[in-house]
Length: 237
Image 1: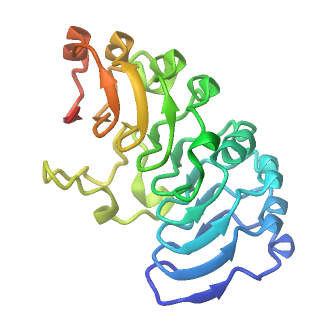
Image 2: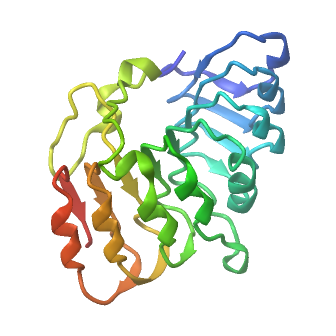
């Protein structure tokens, strides 16, 4: 039901849909909170609610979604980035995590940092935390993602597997398309990150997109980034 003109809240009792595996309601006009009843759908692998008007926190009950692989709530008004991270820490099957353009109403003293545990997710293939209010340094653990280090068996994550439309992955500046596969990505742009660009990012040899633009990073550009042989887009502006 993606890309319609649906409006109203997600008032459906999802606990009755025990075999639900994918929820696609992206690009609509839905409002209200994320329904905690989704946590009863233990086979749920895909939650795509991108570009709606949803608000409130990510329910703590979502930690029960142990099969969750694709989670995209980008372009909403979700609150409490700290709670979102605490909840998603339990979702160890995550392959794609997109939280872009949320948490904008958070007071600066309450902003969050990128949690080090993200680097321990063996299958995490695309991370998009752009356009939020994240502060602090880039965690060293992010440079140790097994799915991006080039040593793991190369797995191309199909867009069709998740019902993702191609134009969602169009790269504006480079005019690149990704041939029906989700590009391995680390996008931390438009936050308040500080410190140096970690040289260890050069170990993520499977990366296609690295975007660290519009932060407050300092120092030199590490020569190790030249080791990113699969890189197609690099934005440090």
